[in-house]
Figure (cartoon, rainbow, N blue to C red):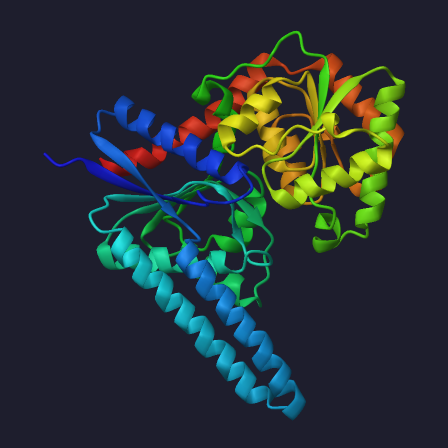
Amino acid sequence: MNKNKIAMIGLNNAKNLGDPLICACTGHLLEQAMKEQGIDGEVQIIDLLPDCLKKKKKQKKQGKNLLKTCLSRFRKLFQFAKELQIRQSDLRDSYLAYYREKLEGCSLIVFAGGGLIKYAQQENLNVSISGAIQAAKEKQIPVAFHACGVEGYNKNNPGCKRLKEAINDETVRIVTTRDDFKTLSECYKERDGLYIAKAADSAVLAGEILGIQKKEASRIIGIGVIRGNIFENYGTCLSESRLVELYGDVLKALKEEGREFRLFCNGYKPDYLFAQKVLEYAGLEETYLLKRAESYEELVRQISGFGGVLAARLHACIISYSLGIPVVGLCWNDKLKYFGEGIGHPERFLSPEDFSTKTIVERVLKAIEEGYEEEAVKRYKETSKESVSRIIALMK
């Protein structure tokens, strides 16, 4: 008998190591659930934004910008709009062809999780997801979304419309979200037969899946950095120079408290370069910055060496939580706020209006002192396993 093949679609090649970690953890949970339910199967990872189509997107974007410049000079707005429509259609066709090939012989499609249900950033996500679901419909393969982030809704945005249409296709059976269930249920969901629920991000189980434990005696505080323009990109008036000062002043305050700390990043180079600026501002040598992790295993091991963490990247926070390490988050996006609420510690996830050196340092030290309530952690992690178990049951 041939094995069942699950096509797990995710951002497996992303430079931010949180996304490949999601894929690894979701793949493990899928395999574990198949074993528990007596299903003989294997997981095939399919990249949601493959390099071949990323390059095509880049070339088209350059052409679009050039075209926009030329047409604006001659005020040929109609032709410009028509050209954009043609290019978008070409890209959809490219993704559809990609998935028609990749999904051959699959019996289930699972979107691995992460911030996928969004349209304002990474605009090609909605085109890729739409192409995958169209190919699934043609091949009559059931589809599920596991613990995906829901980031906003705009009924007039073409990308948002495309996502909503795809999610409500009859081939989609299950959608679970790690964060904004209200927007998923009230704005995106239309079809009665679509099952939706909350579920924790798969990476909350990273520690146990990878067999990595925290160093119990560590008193080092990990400072997880993020690129300097992230807040401005997401609509908050917090400049890179101000963010450098904020991080730097926190380091100075911790040093005055006699606390040991190290800076780290999630593997994304702009984050690492920003960390160097922070060290320069604070007058600290490079030894305070851990090397840029090159794999998600290396990132998890780095974080396991801390006794507490202050971070702005969501998966630096999630990995810390998976290891039982108290974490305080600096929120540039609602997904961090939702994570704080999900784990029962919204007070540990600060909005920009709360960004002061005193407040941040106090929250970090208090979090380290308090830790987590073990039963609450266990219940939260279980929601991710339950979501995957329900998805695997679609194969029966």
